[in-house]
Image (cartoon, rainbow, N blue to C red; front, side, top):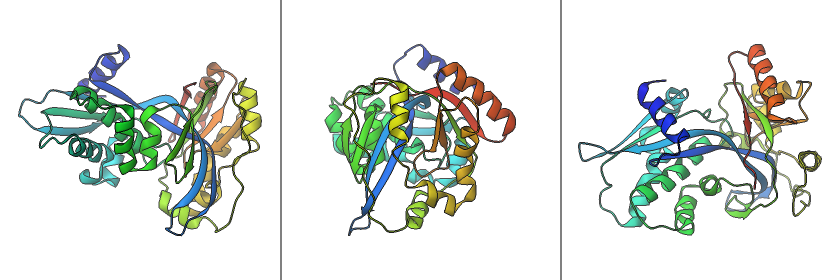
Length: 309
């Protein structure tokens, strides 16, 4: 990691202004109920966010212009697959300025430290866009409420709207109907990605046409980690099978985590190919992450905690 990126991470760890964390999004369950006449799919999803994150920061620019630079372990992968004009963080900044009525953005150097794997089913790009909106709305003193920012996020995509608050939630409709959850405990998890990119569009195209059942009823409050797991065993990720059909390696991460003797539950997140596994404690998750990294040195593997509500 270069000196600038290290300085940004250090600043965030100290709670300094000028930085935002873009938390990895985990779909604990994802039911695809059917396809609408406009081609979009009706979903229900239980979503949480891990404390593993990309980092968005801003520093003053001395040339009067706005810049975006991308650093970090997945920067090259992001640049390889995403033209600069399509970068969600850039689009988020442009949309923010449009809504705010500014003709030109204040001089700034926005840096994205890309730590979340790309095209992995972890919502990294959407989280980056949401964090960019939170950061620039604050740094530019735009006086926007969360509702104002939410409307901007929805213009960029339902996943961006999910990531704005980065709190446990249930998403319905095409992902735009969001209900914040209370009583979701923090979950010790391992996140693993086998390094294969899976197109969400290709996965949905491979999904067999069917009318599927919604998620099982949820308690008003989960009282324990084991209650969460009991509920998850009754729920599904309807994109796991079509993701494996698109790329067989997409199923490998969930299977590898589940083979760990301390894993309580494992599943693909979103459209894959990343997966999560739930453990009793963070120590147990960290030990499992070490074992999996030793067995799969070319994979991305990390232990994390999900954010409680």
